[in-house]
Image 1: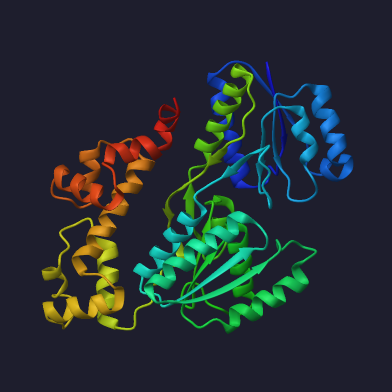
Image 2 (image 1 turned 180 degrees about the vertical axis):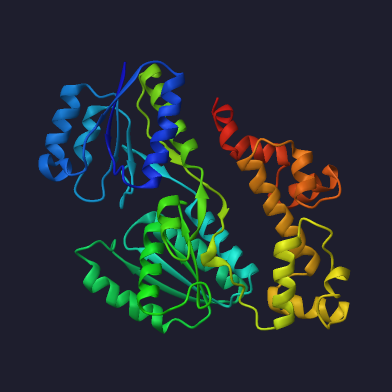
Length: 391
């Protein structure tokens, strides 16, 4: 019987999905038991009290959020300790981490492709995952020549609300509009959404808002609903179970990181708008978004607006930074990728549904864009196949 002590916040979508992946592993691999220790025990018992309880219970592993205080005492237990939401690292422990800079780059590329010139980031002060997301976002923006604005604060809870919301409100008002705003996670995104609503700042017309974690309750509770970056969280939880099993089997406690990487963007109403000044290009973009899976090409688009083919191509590239052809192709590839992850449909069936003429062409374009074939992409990232990838 493997015993795991859990000291994490169950109210967040991230933690619940992490535990779901862990439980999926335990159902397939022997007998496991969990002890859920409420978060307030950190204050009630302190480090020593929790250490003594874990030792007395003979825990085989600990998964904990430990934002404050010292955790060094737990290395004496000589068991795997996984830390989530940490501020500082210690080589004695393992960490739930991820491609944070890659998540920032993904957000920036999404907004850049939509024609924005002004970009903002709202972060959680002092946390590595927030800092690295901001760094990846900023670097990509600087490459494109965009303007970057940054704000960070502690978590905005009921006690901190009065002071923090005044500072955040002032910052949001001062930002140039329209602007693309990337929040470090969905909790910060919904705070921004609420402040904008109270202060008559329009989303997405003035601020296009994107979060991280795809907490469906939070994202759909907001008005407008919030777009968010989906992370491969269940896979991380499954991998934690596998690593714990290995450590117990080999009787050798070594620290390592569990990486939880971005998968794709779940688009909702908060990012509906493109930042485009030319009304004809705006009309073309809206048409492409609704028809890219059909016979959509430059020739058919010239029938929509009073522009020649050459003029359309020139003005489109000025506004979006890419050709009409590449824009349509990118829409099809992203749609293709999302269906690979979210469905079990045949690859060729998905290719035709995404607007490609043949499966062969779709695979060629997909590999060029993603660096792997559609089947390889599905094997690595589709939730229905993620356990096979860990075996």
